[in-house]
Image 1 (cartoon, rainbow, N blue to C red):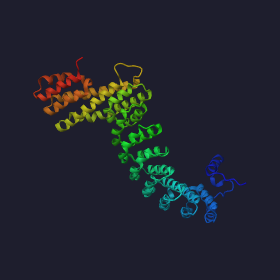
Image 2 (cartoon, helix red, strand yellow):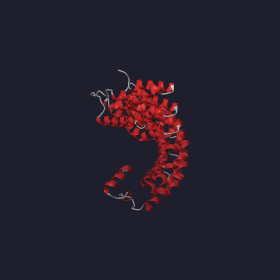
Image 3 (cartoon, rainbow, N blue to C red):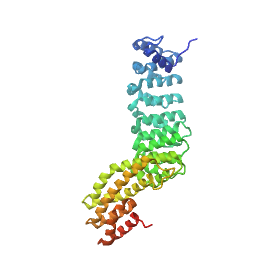
Image 4 (tube, rainbow, N blue to C red):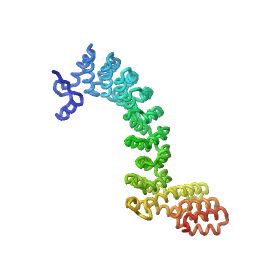
Length: 425
C-alpha cells in the first residue's frame, strides 16, 4: 500500500536530515525539473491527481510561482477539494503571488463551499498589503454563516491593520459571536486597527466585563492600541464589582497615565483591596502615573510661570486638576498606615518622587499668588486647594492672600484653599 507523507511531516523529516526539501526521497534535487511534471499533473482528468499536484506545488512555496496561472485556474475547478487545495497552494507562494492572485482569491471568497471560502480568506491574509484590494470581500466574509470563515476573515483584516478600517463596523458584532473562536479574533483585529477602531471602544470596554479571561485580555490590549478614545470607556470598567474585570481595566489605564491619575479613587480602592493580583496591577498603574508626571512636570511648570496671563491661567488650571489627582495617587501608593495589603516598597519610593514634584508645582503656584492679574491669583489659590495637603508648603502664601489681597474673589479662593491644604482636625 502506498502512503503519502503530509507536507508538515515532509518538512520535519527534511529538517531532521539537514537537507533541502527538494532532496527528499523520490523527488528530483532541482525544482526546475519537477515543475514541468507538476504542470502536466495539473491538467489531469483525475481530481485526485490535480489535488496531489497542488499539494506538491505548495511544498515548493514561492519556487512554484511559474505554475501560478494554472493554480489560479484551479480555483474554478469543478471539484471543491481541488479548489480549496489551490487556495492553499497560492497561500504557500506568499506575497510574490499577490498581484495575480488577489483578484481570483477575492472572487473565491464567495464560493459555495465553506472550505474554499475559508482557504481563500487565509490565502488573502498571506498576500500581505496587496490584499487591501480585497477588503470589501473580506468584510463580507465577516458576516459568513460559517464560523471558520468569520474567524479567518477577522485575522485577515487584522493583519492588514488600518488599511482595512472599513471592517470596523462588521467586526464589532463579532465581539458577541456565538463561536468562541471568533470573538477573540475580532477583538485582536480591532486592536490592530489602532485609533481607527475608536467607534468600537465602548463595545470592547463592555467585553472587559464578560466571562472569558482570554477575551478580556485581548480586549484590554485592543483598547490600549486604540488610545485616548478608548481610555474613558475602560475607566468605567473600574467600577465593576469583580476584581478580574477591574484588573483588565487597569491594564488599559496603565497606558494612559493622565486618565489613570484622574481615576485615583478607583486606584486607591484597588490598592486597598483583598485581591493580590489587582493590587499589583494598581501599583503598576500608579508607578506609571509617577513616571508620566516626572516627564510632564517641566512643561507644566513652564506654563504656570509664564508671564502671559492667558498662558499662565491654562497652566494653573491644569496644575490644579492634575495636581489633585496626582496627590491622591501618591497617598494611595504610600498610605500613612501600612497593612497586609499595602503596596510594595518600590511603589512608596515612586510616591516620594511624586510628592517632591507636587511640592515644586505648589511652590510655583504660591509664587503666582503675587501676580498682578487678579484672575491668575485666584486660579493659583484654587489650584493649591485642589492639590490639598500635598501643597502644605504654600500655607503661608495662602494665609497672606486670604488676609490682605485687594480682590475679594482672591481672598475667598485663598480661604477655601487653606481649608483644603491645612484642614482643621
